[in-house]
Length: 497
Image (cartoon, rainbow, N blue to C red; front, side, top):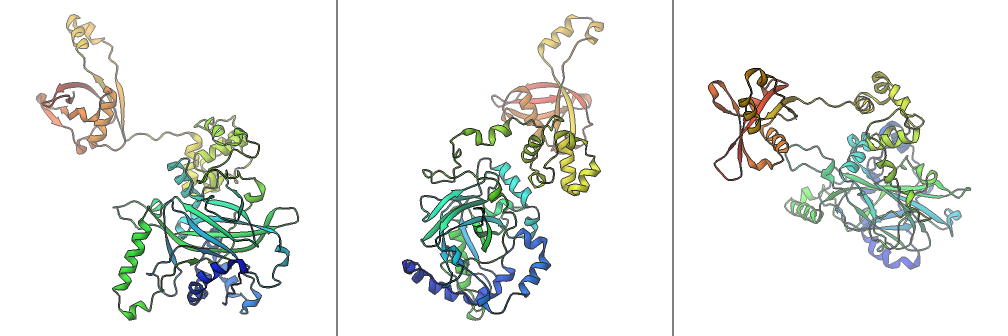
């Protein structure tokens, strides 16, 4: 596929810096267009996507590619010839994306003198994570409250008009730009690739992301909903300076290869050209719900209070008033907010008109049939407010001097009726360290002040409590806690009688 690069005369400086890298990368673009760009729509309709690819007209003149996006970051040299390029980014570092008008003479004349809207997203590349994208992003939001996955560095950006962000879309930003003027947008990615990797033994390989840009023109109603062009590239995000170290490591590995082996790999280019892909499907919120705009005085991705300056536009105070348990009196709006708080955002549209009573009336089988086995069981348990039963429960009572003196001064019958207060200790991990921590909380001391925990055995012997012993404790056992001063200062031995 031949690409035509036509830049305005004012961009001759940019053109001279890009044309060499662009020409050198033409050999791999034809293979990358079909399989290189993944989105959720590609996964859900993969056969259709392949058919559309096979039906592309052979004459590139019939294919309108009005724009070109260039990410100013070097590609990895350790990528094979027919594979898609991979670009390493540092977490939180600002990277330039050049928005280039690639129209030919007379192409799309209706765009002349008009603004277009572009939406930048950071999405998953792996299909496994694409299927659970909503859950993955909600989990990241839960672990990083108040943070965003994608930011715009507004002071460094050029030609960007009216940048906006939807607070529920942590991985998305949007803005307008003028085709007749130079436009460079600087982005910052704050999540790292290993945050979405299953933790096993350390040193896990990070997952790749995609940077995708969708561009739209204005329709008759003044809404930017008519799709013009989409392109994306594959990236990996490392902790600060990690991308530089990874790039250096790949370069050193390639230098050790033989000339024959090097021929199987792509050279590293100073810039990354985003390749054409299918448009992102979930773009309805752009025109249906106005997104808060950025403040021009902040360099970070700060959401403004709104056009009228009213703080009531912030969603956090509303969400803070929602109870943890779903109440039957909850309105459909409150039910939607409860679903968001409990990481069920992917089902908000499905239960759009459901009130709290409607959700509580659903049976376990109903929820599983609607949401599937895994999410259905999780949603049903959350709606019913079920508490997970601990693996082991024991009851302990502190043996105090006051209790012993009371028993001494009373006769046997009175001593038998003495009132003792026990405290429940719930154990999940069934380890001695967990028991030490729970007992320390009961005594309001530091766990380091408890030297050892013993269980009184036959003939009054003291048996050291270990993990294996806890596994054999009988549920709901009762113990008297006695303390004994340890040999070291400010520490105690605990004896379970």
